[in-house]
Length: 268
Image 1 (spheres, rainbow, N blue to C red):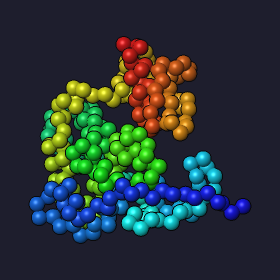
Image 2 (cartoon, helix red, strand yellow; image 1 turned 120 degrees about the vertical axis):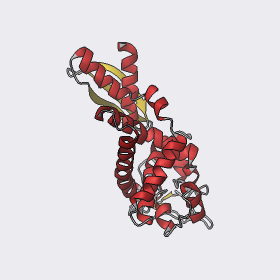
Image 3 (tube, helix red, strand yellow; image 1 turned 90 degrees about the horizontal axis):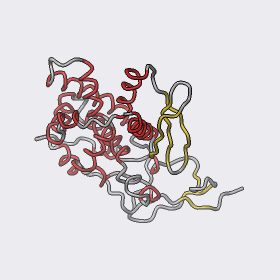
Image 4 (spheres, rainbow, N blue to C red; image 1 turned 45 degrees about the horizontal axis):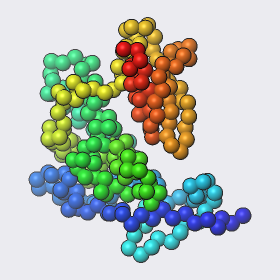
């Protein structure tokens, strides 16, 4: 049967990133953007990419509607491959930075501090509140109309966007590690208070694992309780399956964190 439903993802609020915008965000004296398209690609969410088939929000076959004049058309690729590359580059930069800043600290301290810096929550807040990348995040009309925490201002997704942006700089600069290093370190030292982050560490999953191993003699396991349109419900459990705590979120990782926070509140 030929689908008669129309799929209309076009979003009038999408704004293309310009070379001037990139320059302002980078704040690197003398840097000239060679290929703004790679930075623009770093902004493209998967909901704004052309596909071979389309469906309605309820899963019914649909045909792609025509893009209205003046609106950004769908794109060929999302930021996801750039994000993958940027994640590795960021990890290397931060590891090197921490070794130089804390030369006498043990690997455990360095590992925990790196986790706090490169986690999506930290990166997403930097992307939204300090760099303003949310203004250039290219998303479908449906995502735009979601509540802000799940849509354009989704911290987890904006963390991915920042990683993709870092990869774009890596490519645009001719794989110049020093250039990327300078951008990332300037961002860290300008906007992050590492001692404060260490004092207010809210990585409940790590804390749960240490508590269970040291106090109860086991390593906790995780089970998915539900996975639906409203997000994930995860449970942290004993090895025998006994549930210690549950948590909800739009991402599986954050739902696990919330489950651990719930469990720790009961155990401690």
